[in-house]
Image 1 (tube, rainbow, N blue to C red):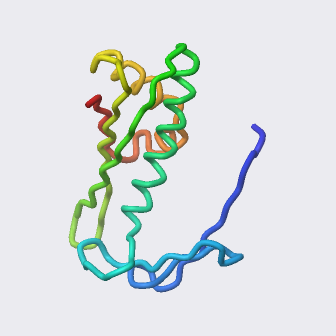
Image 2: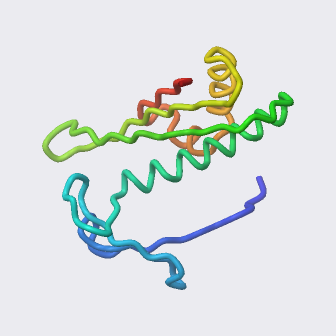
Amino acid sequence: MQKIYTTKMINTGGRSGEVHSPDNSFELKIAAPGSHVADTTNPEQLFAAGYSACFNSALDLVKEGKGVKAASTISAQVSLYAETPTSYVIGVVLEGHIEGLSLEETQELLDIAHTVCPYSKATAGNIDVVIKAV
């Protein structure tokens, strides 16, 4: 396996802190989900952003292989669940739309993309992920 990219982010303060790249070209303030602190994000939003972008790129590869040139949109809804008072897990619902395709055709391509996407591979068997054509 050939490594094609590596990145690094640094966090201080956990869910009440900040994240930044080593060269400080990317910086975000972090707050706990639901805290409504202005100009902040949270780990679940960051995960949703990364997963939706990665999944849509995987879907682009699948569409290209099938000769489908239509635009697609992916939304990722990430939920935080308390297993116990001190243990938490996340779950994901990915919703996908492909211009001009039926729900059945879209679902078929989404299911294939789920086998290609690195985020899907990383989460397989670890968290619940629902894939749904809309």
